Image 1 (cartoon, rainbow, N blue to C red):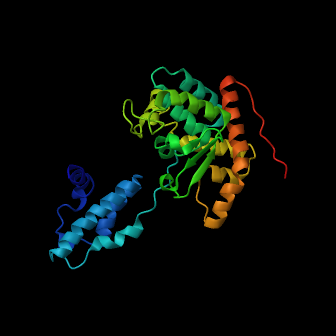
Image 2: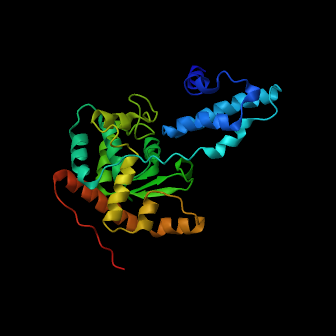
Image 3: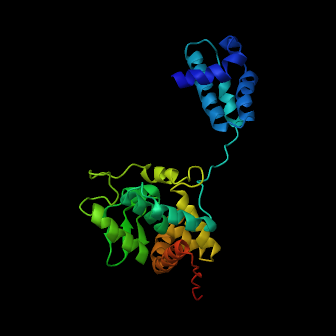
Length: 283
């Protein structure tokens, strides 16, 4: 309530606070909202319009006005530009991996969580709620059930040699629990911000998010000439044609295995200061 009132005190009352509600017109209300739009605060303008709308709806219900003049303002507010998660460029990967490896403040479970997300390009939530029962270490596969996927489709992740090594290391810490990444001493998934705050402590606030590690992998693999369709399946992006999507998921499994192994090799070599050439599949 304090937050709502403050937004009205700052943005609305100075302009129309003294105007009887029955005298308010759409152009006057638009002027109030437009002032907020002009300073680039699009989301604030949307919320402000919602609040003005609620006040005017109340006035209509109480028969203080005949019509809600704020109803006409919705289409006047532009869409806010999409905000993308900041990610690492290829040049920033070596320093990042060395920083993660050398940091003594983050626990080993959080460290492995960050590296697993980076190597596999899964979403943060998919990693946080991962269960040991989903992994077949002999076959090198991680099967994420549909109910845990954003697109509600089962997603199979081929595991590189490096990821398998990470999992065996992690098993020493959390193998007795259901979840891979648990809150210390509890059989519950770790906080959604545990990995993100570790990045902040490394100095990456505003420069990288955990979700941005997906973009790091996607950008690099596209730049290195891997097939876009295969990368999209690896990212578990939605395929408009469900039958085609299911077919591609199965068809690209071995190609994704090769691609993700190349990517893990690239990350390992980058940390060591070497270079890895992209694998060129025969047509």
